[in-house]
Image (tube, rainbow, N blue to C red; front, side, top):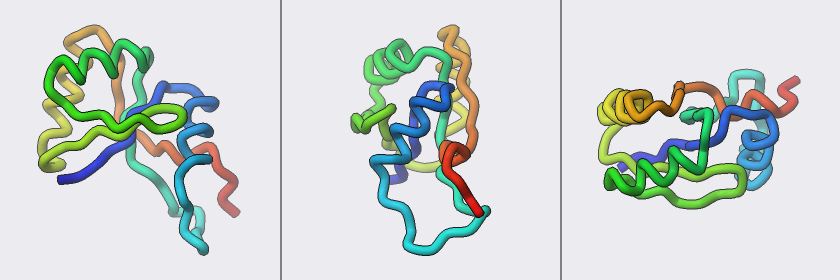
Length: 98
């Protein structure tokens, strides 16, 4: 089983999510956290729960449990077909990486 972040597509939501996550002691500019950004987090969360996905609440968003990474395209398709704009992106792009 894997876990992937689900956050609203906003700097504020991504920042809250990152602040609550432990970061490695040493990281470079290549550090990232793969996640799904959505245009409407409350609607996306409710829809995914109704569809049978488990979402673990986190500050600024949540983590979706998937049986395998190969299920990700289906999840994105379901969100987009439900009218929720969803894309896979780096959630950690809001932290300073020098």
